[in-house]
Length: 154
View 1 (tube, helix red, strand yellow):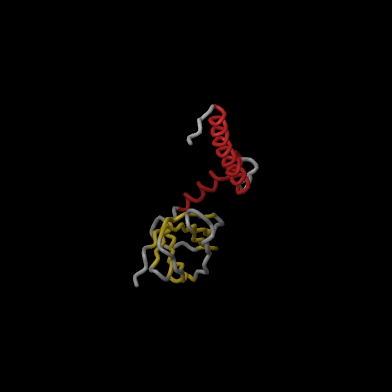
View 2 (cartoon, rainbow, N blue to C red):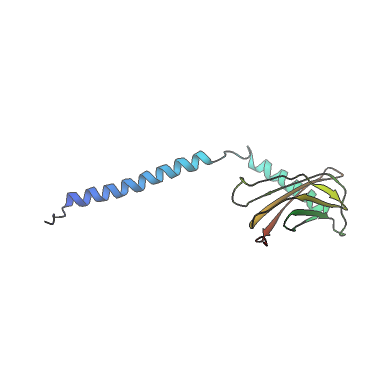
C-alpha cells in the first residue's frame, strides 16, 4: 500500500537534507581551522621589505642552481653568472613532495669539484628541491628546483 506524500513529509526530508549539509560543513570548518598552522609573520609589511632586500641581494649574486638525479644519487651545483662554482660558507638542500612534508629529507651532501652529491632514492613523481646556501660575504641564496623522478628500470 503506497503512502501519501504530505507537506509534513517534504518538510522532514528537506530539514534532514539541510541538516546533513550543515553538519558536514561544520566538521570540515573545524578540521580546516584545526590544521591551520597559525600566523606566519607579525607584520606583513615589514616582512615584505625584508623579503625585497634579501631578493635584491640574492639577485646581485647572479647564481643559479641545477639538480640532477641518476636513480641513486642527487647532484646539485650552484653556478655564478660566469658558469663557475662559487665558494660557499654553507650549503643544504631539502627534498620533498610538493603536496606534503611527510617525505621531506635533508641528506648529507659531500662536495667534489663544486658539485654537492648525496645518495638518495626518489620514488617516481614530482619532487621539490629547496636549495639554501650562504655566500662568502654572508648573502643568503635560496632557490626551489622542481624535479620529476621517472619510474625505476627493473
